[in-house]
Length: 391
Image (cartoon, rainbow, N blue to C red; front, side, top):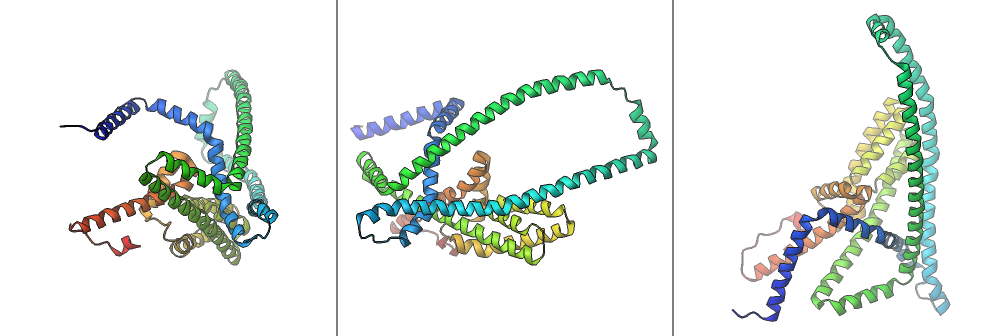
């Protein structure tokens, strides 16, 4: 059999991929260290890209409604920086309003908790004294214990001394981490501003590079996936934020009608935690029930019932209409995405797992649809899609 050049290259490529895959399986720890090192270097750029993506959502709104057709070059030059500034101000105002609602109420709740602790300790001491009278055997057992207080004091002193050294080292490590985090945040913000100021030029340059170095079919597929990812992430972020605002407002209004305490703080907290799919709702429920339970267990039970009902209304009516069916996933996919994302990357993984999974789901659905169409055109028997699959 005569082998042409293309076939030889394919064979060599498959053999090289197989060798690399075998080597990767034997050196997973080395690959993980290399990936962590590369991620640490590129982290400011990746963070800046994420900032630019989030800021671009309100910026596009301002660009559609502000100076749509500038008449002179100066107005055209100021349009983009002005929209960026307005987007930053909008985000800062929203965050400031949330903190203004949450922080004072949270401090008040901690003050209530601080007053409740001494009362609990007094009640515990009273219970212990009454128990000593009821159960003299326990008092005799405590008296029979042989405790070397000198040795205990030496061990405690040694522990405190070692702990002070560890605390000092930990403090230095935390401070260096904070300084590094602030530096990365500043660099990421500057990088995000550069991306937003020249996003059209950057997009054009990226497209030219892809067309120049990739086959046209691959480049078109890459553009298609990138556009789908951009639309999906934008709809997910804007939809989640809108849904969080609606849910937080409804929670605040409902708690106010039911005369439950901490209504502004818990409403804002429920709205913030609603940004995390599935898990966030339970976080807001548990924290809110704990805060209210410090004052009244009956009101805490009423709050739990109210929020469970509100979550059902939100999940079945608000979320599908606000976020949209194009981003929505079957419940099993959402649960799997949140579970895997949270296990790998924590809260950030929970936030980004759902849109990533929705992109993969849309690509898989499109691929299945095209292959079935091709099989149907070839005369093969293809099962008809169900009404749920058409959605």
